[in-house]
Amino acid sequence: MTIDAVNIRDTDVFDDLPKTNRLGNSIRCFRKCDEITLTDAAKALGISKQLLSNYERGKQLPSLQKVMDMATILGAPAVLWIQYRINDEISKLDFDYTVTLTKKDAS
Image 1 (cartoon, helix red, strand yellow):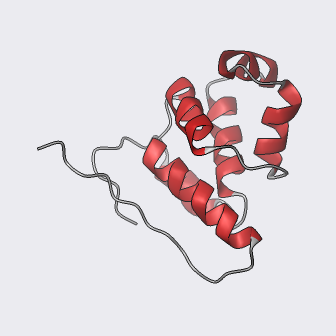
Image 2: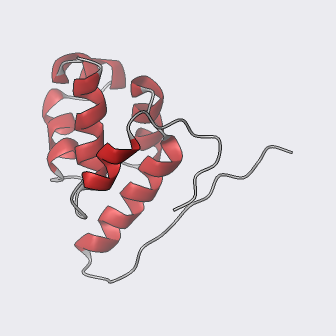
């Protein structure tokens, strides 16, 4: 996986995530590392606490726009989270594919 111009706080944490529900686990990890409650994070995102919990547990997948919103609020790597979102959906469909995204330079 190649991600340019993205500052990931603990890359080892991402390597240890299970291969399924990587997005939800990553959301929970960032939220808890920043000591943000589920209620406060949901309020900042304009969604219910239950919906955010469903995202974290992999019960529902957020839209790509919501992934971008969460990444911004939690200071997370948006490119990686979009990649996780797409791969989690592919995994739910029982396909054996992995999508890798690379952020282009702004030049």
